[in-house]
Image (cartoon, rainbow, N blue to C red; front, side):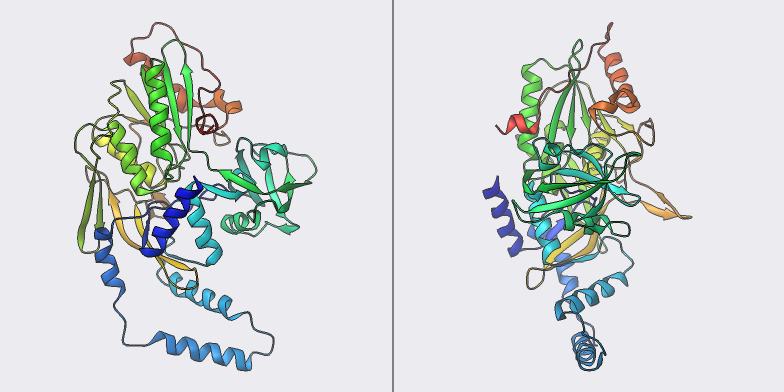
Amino acid sequence: MRERGRAWVYTLLLMPVLFVGGFVGSEAYAVLTHASPSLLRTPLTNLTHRPALEPTDAFRSALAEVEAHYYGKPPAVDKLTYTSIDGMLSALEDPYTRFMDPDAFRRMQEDTSGSFTGIGALLEDAPGGARIVRPLPDSPAKKAGLLPGDIIIAVDGKSLERIALDEAVRLIRGPRFTEVKLTIRRGDEEPFTVTLKRDLVESPTVDVYLEDDENKIYRIWLQNFSEKAPALLDRALNQIRQEGGRAIILDLRANPGGLLDSSIEVASRFIAGEQVVVSVVGRQGLLERRYTLRGRYANLQTPMVVLINGGSASASEIVAGALRDHKVAPLIGEDSFGKGLVQTVIPTSQNTAVAITTAKYLTPNGTDLNAKVVDGKRVGGLKPDIEVKNPDDWRMTEDDKARDMQLKKALEILRDQLHATKEGNGVLRAQSDAEVNR
């Protein structure tokens, strides 16, 4: 796994990369993709244009004046430089165009390989800190007894009260075997501090659940589109086939996206023939269509549904949109996030990079995946064929499955298609990444 990660990083240093996901706060992963050189030629040509004004002269002059006349000790030159770049990009008023300093760029490289060093917990933003969605199996967080719903309010004594989730992740991660102190708020209890030793963590990718043992209905929870997702999906599908699976729920809820190539691979398992998965459109028009890949179709011949919610973004929306447009599976749940913009990630200098929005994605039927802000409200993304809402405080954990109305609706629809006369019981876990990788 680590060797494959290093190989990808090497490729990254040779050519630009494309985002196919908005940043989702998670200690486990960010969401990115690399693209073919042919796809990159048009946006890169546009990037080479230089305005008449030489901005480097103005920047150097201003930097020299600050260093010469500021009454206190100015920050390091690299910090001043990074801040100026952030300011320049903010003028675009695009939330996805951003600068990555060496730490952020390194995290991106780790994330796409599917492994990183940290505490091993999926995080989301929360008032006063970062909430643990769930600790990962065999992780430092799990071994320390951290629970879903715990809120990290401080890292090594530094409060997270006014800290962005991205910065909180940076504080929590660190070199392997080093210690980090987390202050935890758990329900109405008094906050307490726990010390964890960071370790190498494998990002969760595929979990398989037998949700109805009587009717052999399986749920595949695909949690990201990392480079290992296609191989793990193949193993899951083979398991389901061997165990006589009769119906499949592809669960893309809370999946923030990942590698574009992985999304094409995943879609190719479920869509027969050579079909369009996604179209990439730039400001000059169509740049590229991506098609299903030959020899990847699983041909399970079972009914199927897809679950989505507001945490389903980018690559998840590409796959969900393609499966619906090709009438492979209906979508059940809530509106997806609506991240349909392409960011070209270009390495700059001294291990930094800049991500610039260069295009957008369309589903095979031409649906624009990107949400718009209308009257202060976010509108867009994929609309489910069958809308089902879960409680606002519902968590995607085994302990909260009884309140999962979306899963219940999916089972109801599949049982109806199977003409089931009896409802089966769910098995706690059929298979996980940890079992696959042993």
